[in-house]
Length: 317
Image (tube, rainbow, N blue to C red; front, side, top):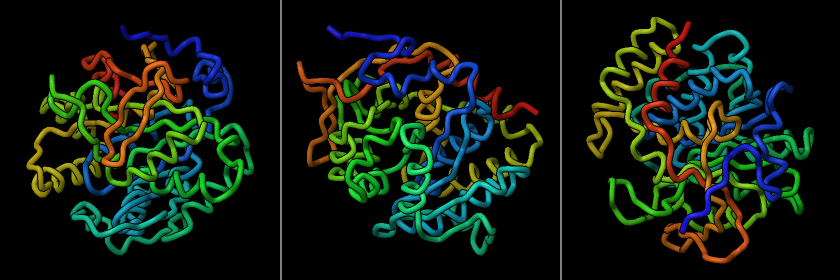
């Protein structure tokens, strides 16, 4: 039997990461750690984050393959968004073996004072030192940067408010009705994921169970990409690149990463399971019965409402 707990109120285990505490107060400071440039959902997630006035984006860090190329892409999107977003720092984190990333060519040669082609881990550490216990890391790529951060300084885990991540599969895989399988963000660096899951930092997890069916339909795409804003025009360009170059022949974007943002400061009540989630060497995640919970996990959400909210938010003037 699954034991559910409403996101509001929070369990004592995650009292310091309770989204309800943000109500009526200053925006919650966050760092967005992303592998933008491979799948398209990272770009949509970053656009969504810019529409969240209840979250304060301190900076963006990028991870995996050519992290500097990913950083240029993120920085160009922020520059196109204009205003204060042009000043948000973007730092490349740790690179890994090369992946196919056609979207990053859209930002080739882009330069900005806010763009830094290295230093991602150091940036996160500096920001956490400035605001101990207050910053949430939103991690929507492999967990290489986050694990390196945790390993960089003794006791730093206690100074991180929470990590909200997209990753893992608890009761299903990518396809409806399928068995759990190693999910990309976790299996890309299972050792790093294990470090994060065993760190003691409060975790908010958006796994395949609740994200694999967050499809952007053609009708939603039209509403979003005809909004006539510079940022949505940029999303349209990246969407087209992704649509015709992704190696898995995807057509309808799946917005896996957006839920990890929503869980930090939810606009609606979500039912989360308090679980102890373990990471195997192959990247498979599984709940451990009778073990102390290390995470609160979104297993099911109202997909239609979630997607409608997202499209309205990002396409609004």
